[in-house]
Image 1 (spheres, rainbow, N blue to C red):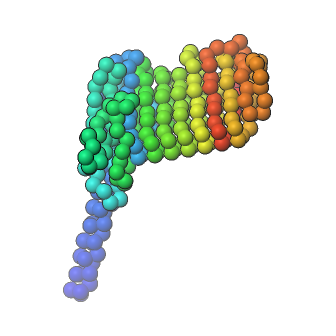
Image 2: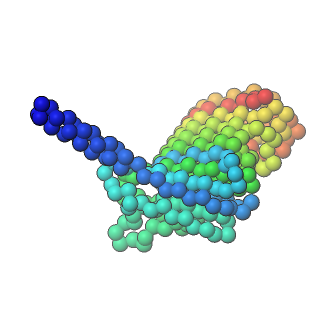
Image 3: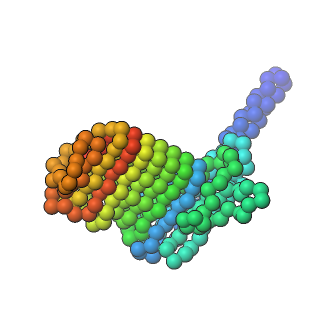
Length: 262
């Protein structure tokens, strides 16, 4: 009887240790605040995804969840920077020995070196109306749904999905792009990849100028195009309807499809 009790206690203790280890593999950061209309919430990641949706209120909410195998999650800092263009939130990895510390900044000010660090940071963002979204990562997918204002999405290794956005700029290297627009765009749109296809769903009655090009892939459109200049099976430029904002679609290895969304 005593032996059974000891075994049960040992098993329970082992289960608690395993549970604690599992819980230690996820670590969250949260930020909530105001961003002025016309400004942007900007996310800068390296390893990990960015998922954005429309906020139910008037504030921006950001959650960053860390996942890791061997490296110390505390070695990757989440930094918040406010500047004249809005709010910038970055995953900042340890810098190389002998080099300047990595820092949170825009454009060239943000260092991307991770020193083979296996910590991943997944961002979840809630964006209110009037606020733009800038989402960038290197190894991870980007998804944005229901954002009513401008969306800029950039990754290297990962796909991009955008639904119901206003102006969109989506760029990846290794990944496909899926986008659906709910209404007539008021600004230009750009969808560019290297290794991946592009599928764009547009509303009936849209008026836009379209530029399409691929190298190794086919072009398929459910919209009639009024062709401008030269065209062929790999490239075309023309107008949908009466013409309007420019929609640029380009890939090297993949097809391009324009779908009528109704």
